[in-house]
Amino acid sequence: MSNPSRERVYLSLGGNLDDPAKTMAAALRMVDADPQTEVVSVSSLYRTPPWGKLDQPDFLNCAVEISTSRSPRELLELCLEAERKLKRVRQERWGPRLVDIDILAFGERVIHETGLEVPHPRLFERAFVLVPLTEIAPDFAIGGESASERLPLVDRAGIEKLPSGREWWKA
Image (cartoon, rainbow, N blue to C red; front, side, top):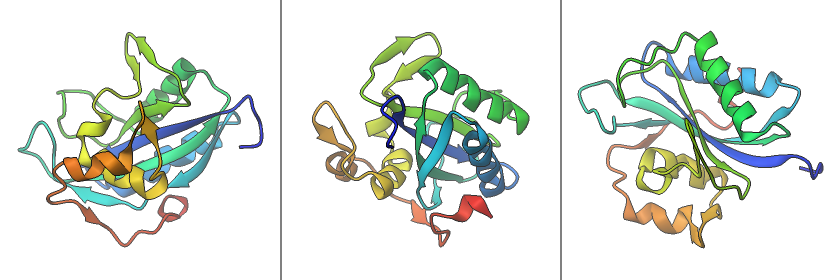
């Protein structure tokens, strides 16, 4: 990130319908294709048990670091547009989905707006976010607490790192 007008942002992607790896890869390529946004680092894929609503298939999840000159709201719209293009349908909270893209952190900013809360309010409660995030950003911290310090405090049962490597999304 040599351009000071760009922000370091962390995203979480997940899905559990159809071919989530393929859908997540397509979403990442859409984000990366944006002239104001560049994918810097992508975690491996992780198979994770459902969270919140348990009667559904396991998810695939990953964490992503991007660099962007977009505003937080513009980035949110870019992510939502990628979800729409990939036919994401929002039917029930924490329910099954083709793809979900969440903004975890946007530089050092704290944002509380309708539809946009950064840092993500449940970031440090969810192993399906923390496990892949610590792979690409072990020193990532909020309020003096790092993701690596928080990880041992969450239930990681059932999370499995898949043999995907970090370039899985470019295929």
